Image (cartoon, rainbow, N blue to C red; front, side, top):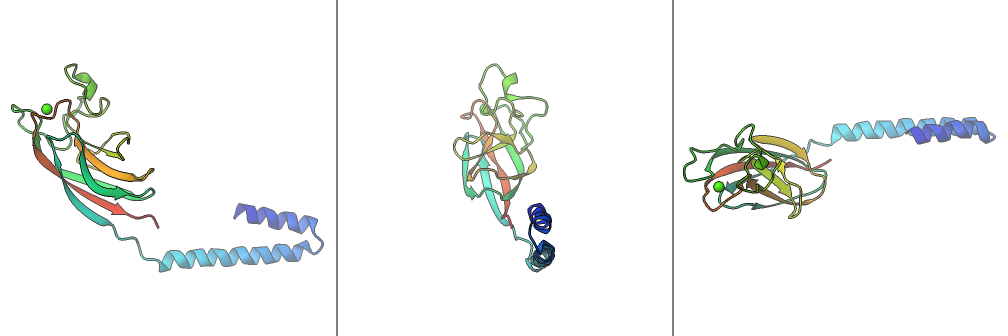
Length: 172
Ligand SMILES: [Ca+2]
């Protein structure tokens, strides 16, 4: 829109009869605005696609089978209890508040900078892990498969699963 205004201004100065051209351009811009406004009103809001997937604590990265397209808005909400060791009373998807993977010298956690035992995600096999916890909404930058995991350093002694609701809304 700025570019059009600039062209209109330049045309008014430079071209003989430029004022007429400028008026024409202004009319075009007005028409364009009306078209955009009409489109916004007429098009219905996008309907999200919902998935329900388990996140097993004994596996490092659970492949959800959900392919996320770039630009889509995704909300993941999780619930349930997992056990990160035989002695564990149980962990919600929020994990252990105030503890980070790197705080445990005995193990290298899947994400050393994220909350211990929290639900974490990555998009694509080599995507950078980020925290989900109980619920988070994000916009997908690079398309790929959604993986979900417990942020632990040792998985074979884990049991149980969380249930994650994944809501994907396409971009307009
Ligand atoms: Ca463990």
